[in-house]
Every structure is written in structure tokens, then in C-alpha cells.
Image 1 (cartoon, helix red, strand yellow):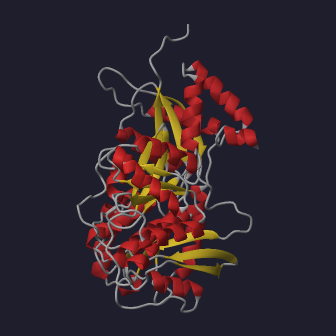
Image 2 (cartoon, rainbow, N blue to C red):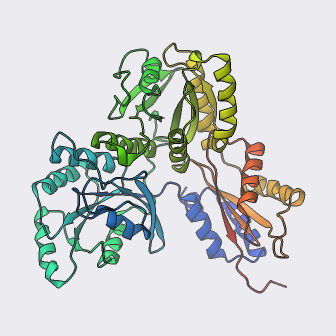
Length: 482
């Protein structure tokens, strides 16, 4: 069992055969092992950056991810469209959830900080708690500390705005929070961030715990996502056969996801009803911003995302953004076109054209046309979810995959560029949930050719309802074996 884990998804015999193939093609064994291990790890560890407003969280996030992406302004309450970013330090990749820049809620600052921190740490493997060392620990900081203790996640304490030796004493005062050593940093100037990130890596797991999957008897987790007022709560009530969720004509009634264990077709499923994602996070009031954060957290923990689309309205940029979030998170996906019973012939015609043009990125996802209100076609939802899960967990044996790749290269070689013709030499599937492939090639493969490979993989092996990740390793220039 351990050996199988060490080789990603490959068994011993398959692994030995594969490494022999790699050696014959002139690849370094360590390079190949590293590529399989990296591709096979699946979801990245998640670091939540928490703290009260205006302590420099977004500036620190920009410092960690190495680019100016999180919006920063010299006032509290600035938000952005994205809350999750990818970062790398010392050769290890991880996700950063930025909880900075949210509006203060009418319930008062302590309540809003607590709500926000709670939503962020729910999907996190570790937390980075940022405190303004020049101000010292406030009552609000103490409230966040209590929350972090209750969550039981590993915590790294960043004492921010320490720009010189004089600030070191301010940082030392934060030992009083009882979270261990405060790391003095200046997110603005980068001072001390290296030591801070070293500590973050010590607290983050090498690969995160599987938050889903093969727990014995554990129900599969389904996140219902979509923009506000698309009918998520009505759908949950219909599958549950009772009114469990407040349904209101007013968009955005749902604030927190409500986990519901529901039996369908003799199987128990865990449905998570998430608050709708609004168009622009930075236009949201505090509570709506939390809703976006909470939806991202629910998707992180789910296995399947059922994306609801309101068919009475045009497919919007909001819908596209929600789909992208689900695809990027690597979840199995089902598209449910809701309010289908309300369509006339003309709208149905134009909707089909919209689906052809606007939904290309998820043309592989099972589709159900439903009505959450009347229950139309609700019986088709579970088979669609099961199909998507089957695709998400599909694994292609290495021998079969390489026979398939050989046929493709022979029938459809990569276009010649600069007098050279890159070739796929061999490949393997490094993991599932979602399926992840590593292809080893003699040169750079263009994006269009990668898309062609993905399309052919789907035609040959199914993979209905799941994103596919393909990474390519190019053979380093070295003397060929005689």
C-alpha cells in the first residue's frame, strides 16, 4: 500500500515498466519521479490570512504570492473579485485565502471579524494571523485568538509594520496573545517575510488531508452554487421534500451554507446550500462578502459542484465566474438549468445558442433541465451527480494510455515550429479526483495541441463531468545514448 502511495497512482509493476521507458527516452529518473509526485498530489494546502481591518493583510498576501494582485488601498474595507491565490515558497506550492478588505458589519467589529475569520479558516489547513505591532493586541485581536483556538488549526503569528530594530520590542509584546512566537515582518518592505514563510511551510501539510472521498460510510458532499436568486434554496427544499431553507423573492436571503443530509435513490448525500455569489465582491456589503468567501470554502470541501443557471435570464459574466471557480478547484461538475418550465419556444431557442457559445468550457459536464419549484426532472439530478463522480475518479492504466498516445502522435503529429516537431514520448495518469496526467515530450507542446489531447482523452476514456489537468515535462538537452 505504501509503495503505491509513493508512486502516485502507479502500482509497483506499472511503475517499474514506466521508469524503464523514461530511462530509454533519456529522462532523468529523479526528474520523472518528481513530476509524477507533483502532479499526483491533488488539491494544494490552504493558508487563510486573517486579522482585523487595516493591519496590512492584502499587502502581505501580495508579498507572499509575489505579484500585486490583491487590491490594496490605504483604508479598511477594500475588497476584490478573487479571494484565493496560488503561491510558492522554497519549491512548495499552496493556496492563500485573503480575508482582507471587507466592510464592517452592523453587528459591530468583533462580530464581523469573527464571522469572516470563521468562514476563511473552515477550508484552511493552517492560518496566518496578522496583527499590527505598532498598535499592539486589541480586544478584536483577542476575539480572533479565541476563534483560532476553537478551530484547532495550526497558527503562525505575523507582527506586521515592524520596519526596523525599534519595532522588534513591539513585536515581542505579542507573545501575550499565547499563540507562540510573533514573527516581526514588514509586508510593505518585505522585511522578515522569508522567515515567516519558512514557518508557514512547517505548519502546512505536505499534501492536504483528503477532505472528501473514501471515508467509510461518509456521505458524498455536494455544493449547490450559483448567483443570487437562481433557486438554490428551492432546489434543496425540493430534493429534501420539505421546507428546510428560507426561500425569499429577495435575492441573497441565504447567508451561511446549510448542510443537509438527504436520502435520494436509497443513498444519503450531504447537500451544502451556499449563499449566491454577487457580481463584484468590492461592491458588496460585509455580509455579502462573507457569502462569497463561504461559497469558496464550501466548494473547497465538496466533491461535486452543482451549478444552477437561471434559464429565464441571459447566461452572464457572473455565471462564467462561478463556473471558473468550480473548474479551477478541480471538483466534479453538473450544470442544472433551472426554471426550465417557464421558457417559451423563442427563449428556449436562444438559450440553446447561448449554451453552445457561452458554456464551451464545461461542454463535458452532465446537464439537467429542471424546475426547483415544480420538481420537473429532479429524478435526473442524482444520476448526473453519479456520472460526474465516476468521471472524477476514473483512472487509465499507463499501458493503455501510452498505446492511445502513440496512436494520436502517429495520426495527428504536433505542428512543426521553428523547424522542429515536438513529440509526446510517453505519459502517465498521476492521480484522480480530478484526473491528472503528466506527459513527457521532446519539446514544448502548444496550448491548442494540449486542448486537442484533452478532447481526445475525453472521447476515448469518458471523463464526463470532471475537469482534466495535463502537465507537460520537456526532456532536458543531454547527450543521447548510443
